[in-house]
Length: 273
Figure 1 (cartoon, rainbow, N blue to C red):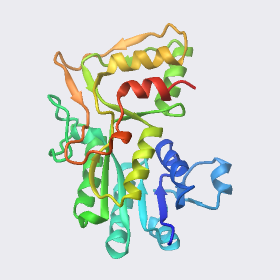
Figure 2 (cartoon, helix red, strand yellow):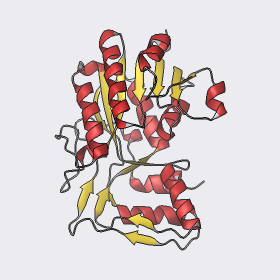
Figure 3 (cartoon, one colour):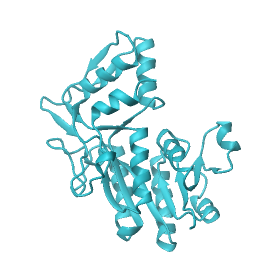
Figure 4 (tube, one colour):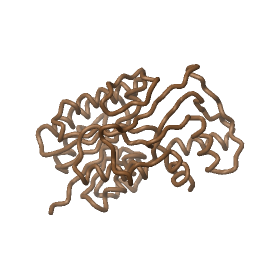
């Protein structure tokens, strides 16, 4: 049986590289990078790709992936252009596209958590970018695409955790939002879920976060307590007097119980290094 060829666009980023590490022992996995780290230059499964200068089509024609996972960040106009080309490639070839999207596609809604079939609406530039790319995928045949909406992602090597440590060491206030209700994930849980979806050839829209909700302020404070014994400075931001939700929960596309988790598990098992 042929091993699936997978290309991770944005394979050198925090999420993209975590996906690569999860998948490469099981699949013929490739990634793109646009960083100066020599580990990627030496890895023959990684291809240099500057989204603002290079055409992704060249790499796609070279690798001929059966699954493309898009976890790329960077210039918004270049992201849109790149995804136009990726979607064209998927239309013309025996290939599926898995897009790592964001809870921010719902950031204009604040009164409730959001579910897979809810209409997207965003007030942020970032959320609107993700919606625009999602809409490209929604024009593909359903079996050729998967949209993975992800809440805040934590992990020992994540930018968020590094920023917390830097802020604590430099006495910089850490922003918390007392009225914001979220769900969360980390690199370990997210990549296990993605592995399952690829193994089972799943398509459609998935919400990949903790199954329960937590206030942003409470979550951040508990994480920082786990990082070490510090006296951090918190800056409490009240964007509204009412409680506001930014959470993506599954309703129609639930994963098996062993792949569901609580926000407490993210705090307890995956933050301490």
